[in-house]
Image 1 (cartoon, one colour):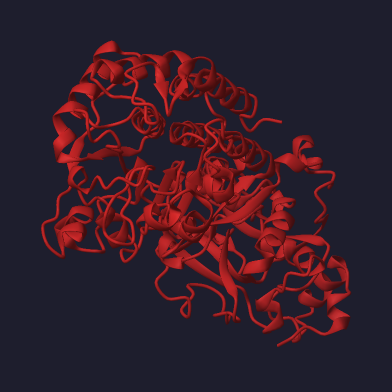
Image 2 (cartoon, helix red, strand yellow):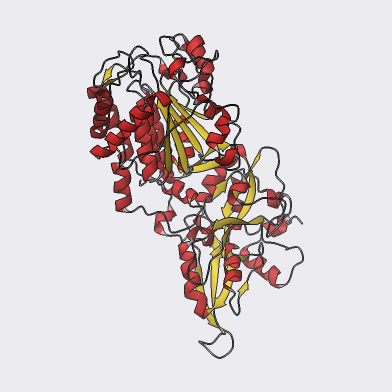
Length: 601
């Protein structure tokens, strides 16, 4: 039943008095005591207290910074089984009042229901006798208000802070929203997105799994009402959290549509990646690439790659059809830069190439590993050729099963893309179809396989993936009506030189993995706070592109007869622009932004 305005306006002390008097109007505490924190309560035998406290510290976000304890004794035998410890754990009810103040509807309160709580398939970090899956609360939020909901809850770390998941419940292992494990089913309204916060009921799951001889807890949804204000400037809030820096405030971005997934990243990191995106959009070759620019394509691509586990990268533009090999120096350096960073982050990486170039590319990779300057290990290199209508699905998925994809992201960088007439054109509108394998089919097939995202990186509009901006290419680029790629990618990153797009993706991934807000979201709020070790930071830094590495790799390409795209020169240049100063300066500037913005402001 809906709480009356009278109850809504009562202080925690007055509400506690009514609860002790068993006031029939109070069924749950959701929507009550606005302006104050609420708490889960757990009482355990003394001998389990240290293990449970360690469990709380190992999983701080679902048990929250409010975790505290007091010891007391039942009966007259201290130290016996009757010696108990009481823990008070944070609760997301503590931020519901602030959500309403920010204009974010709280559907469970509107519908007079307890909040929906679900047991997930995500395991908590075990400690001592305690291990269990994460439990989350779900609140539907209109898509246009996701940022507001994230910002408000981020400011209340005592009530679990920002969401741990936004989007498809199945990604948490929740198969049926209509059947919560605790609480009531809350109905979504048109335009709502499911948003999940860590839940203190996880503690009940932990207790059930450990089977203590005696334990007490609250009933889910019936919380202890504290006298602690919900303001982030509360006196018990750690000093570092008292005044959150605006650059650390998380923002919410959609990563994929199928399945629906959003991600969180701090304002400061967003600003850095946007700087990178503007930088690579410079157009020294005067191709008019700025006309194709769409803001945040780089950011969304980096977020999608950050959530991935297995990535396939393809490159190769045989523009020099009169030479052997016909390939150009734009593309492979950017591809290797991305692969190097992805590998350092623990992702699986596979390179896809044309059969005609297989042995050459294998030799280039082997040489790059031998020198030790660019690659630390050989990257698997595969080809894809037309083998019938199901060939792409079988390539992308184990046994051709769309529920078992081999890759969760495909990246094409400076890869010749199929035009509307089925041919492949260079910027001079010469058809080079005879030199290109139908890798485009993989991007087309990926559209129909849930869980596989795609990125295209290009600098002219005829590259694979640029079909997302096809209309702009057709109307604004030279010969665009003929050469425009027909095949889109989920994210179309445009750059003055495609290699720069690859460098920017590598830098963007580095920034994301040194961003506490993003790391917390990747961890689903579990595990210790993201304190990146000096060794890990150093490893990621050494795997960023550098002037020395890129110069060395370009030299290797030239040794194998690969030429500059615009001029055909067999020289240290890309797209007719010499490595020094044009490309070396761009790399230096990208690194200045990246190394100066490691998520610590």
